[in-house]
Length: 136
Image (tube, rainbow, N blue to C red; front, side):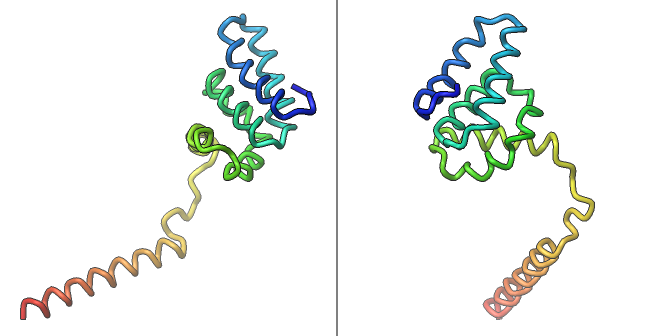
């Protein structure tokens, strides 16, 4: 997992998901530790990160706390990842956000929501105005 070639590191990440079903609990924890420390936290190659996150989804989809240290990096590099990986990673990040981000105090009371509500009212009034002028 510490090779200089991103292709080798990508293959190592893919191998982790293949090894995990054949391991006992202690070996599985060691695999997760290697994945987190060597691939998720340190690696900046999108190819490696995509493979590591896909392996993460297969190994421990509910242990989202392991993503704390690399969450921002994942979000930043998401647009550079391949399309198939993006689908899985967006699902993973959505589950992460639902679990660890609290609902904001002023939710649905912010400026964007007020503007949106005003626009809906204006559109409704405009459509009612055009309906009444068409019927006259």
